[in-house]
Length: 133
Image: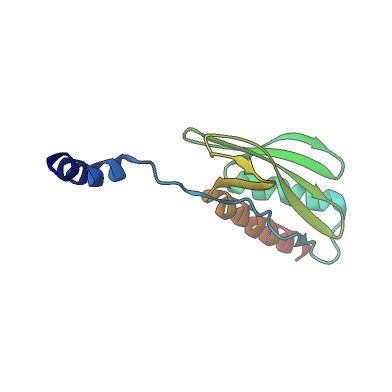
């Protein structure tokens, strides 16, 4: 009986010591429509502006595709952006310290991933509007 009481008394401390699981399903952002009238080279410039505005570094570039890396504290995230004159799509490439994993065909990553990608998409839309106007 006393051992059960001790175990129950220790349980809240053990629960507090457990790390909070902050993983969510990895959902890629919806494609971003290119502002009417922009050419692919202008979209590339807008992407560079959007990444830089949010603290990302473009690490690789080729026609229609670029890779960018975000380094925040101990976290690293690498994504690709594929683009043409109609749309821009983003895709996960690699990460460190973001608890990326795949279970039963479903990809999971730190909950901040979605927000970081949404921020880049928002900055991209703004940069394209400025170029068009």
